[in-house]
Image (cartoon, rainbow, N blue to C red; front, side, top):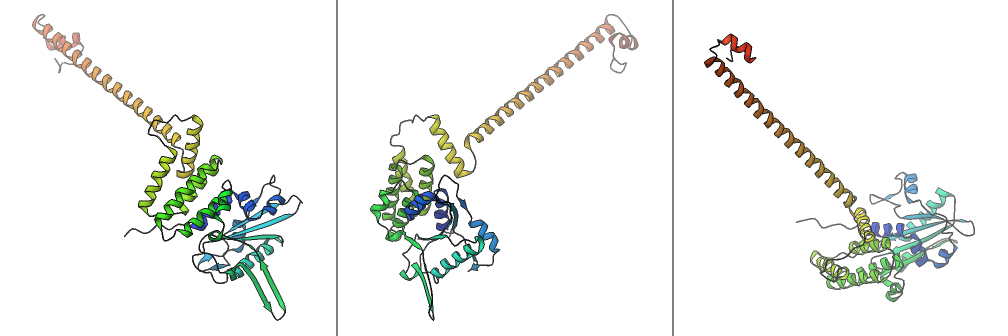
Length: 338
């Protein structure tokens, strides 16, 4: 039996946030979005933090820190660290809120800043309410930690659709639809087609368009037969007629870049390489054919010369009555040949 494909849902969502981080902040915290000095570059630091931990924090053979940590500059001149934890919540996770607090402590210890804005994004089953805050009281010493939680399954559909130009809003809508249709592939197909329609109608730039299409294709996964129906629908959506399309050079370039992103190489470059190889092969073939004809011509010329010498030898022998030594000297050949 073929092994079922394992989809890394966390990685899909994290990659989208990496590409469209301002969209995430705008959706999760509009006030913070207004406060960030976006003209200055922001910096992703999660890998740096992972490296600094040197594998000391692990849980169930996995690194404890695998989410997004971003350093931003505020208009006020302050520096703020934004931590985003993304969780596929298929079942309740023990001590989730405690881990959120631990991450904050790790960030503070590593960078010496306690300005951390934290977010938990739940893209699967809704979490238990107790996991959305941390509170611990120990004989009068109380520790409270609140972070912003985005639960895709409980978010308002109309609100997310109204924000369809925001890549993260559409991603959360995809997660919501995936949750609602997890036991119903026919409904999931309807949702997946609806998401593609929303992306097409959003009027977003090409880069965001294709990244969202790829995200929806992978995140809202379908059984193979239903996936084929989805592909057929998309084909009819983008290529509504069977007539040959007139495609501009700009569109060709866009599709070429998308192909290169997806497969790791440029099809036009591969075509040029193939054409260059074909030209080289044609040149080699022509050169080989030329050599063959030249060799054949030389062979014919040598045979003709040989026949002429033989005829000369016969004439000198029969007509001039010369002996072999005389004939050899006159014909310029050896006595053995005479």
